[in-house]
Length: 210
Image (cartoon, rainbow, N blue to C red; front, side):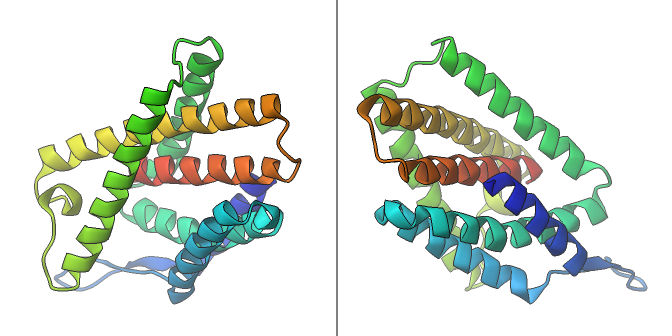
């Protein structure tokens, strides 16, 4: 349900974005709809609240899917206007990673131990902190070379690392679902689990695009 809502909203975000607009003697201009920025903020808040208030996840999950889906659609249109066919490739790559991780988890080739869980969570918070630092310093006209693409080798290397980390988070999502069923968590936690999966998939997709 959340994925369907995300895709439907993404279609609206795609259509709301415009570009590229040719500029004589310069680079084409792509127009990112202002509403997409609002979608990012609303989606982020919805996830934070849902994780703290699981009983609200069945409401905030769809809110995230609709709000963030609009932004993802607009972002995807931006990449597609300059790199024809990249969105289909990114979607297929995301689906492939999901299926591979699910098989590896179900066959117990990948085992979610306490050490594995701690390592992935710490690394994820580290990357989130790095994103935040990058955003703050960008307000002062400074960028990090492995995030802005100025150093191609570092940028690709960092993206591959983050894609691997996002894939590892899928294993944590699967583990949360399995442990939740085994321990008899209340039914409304299925929305928490579903939201967690969608958030991870969106993160993985956007990083593959980047």
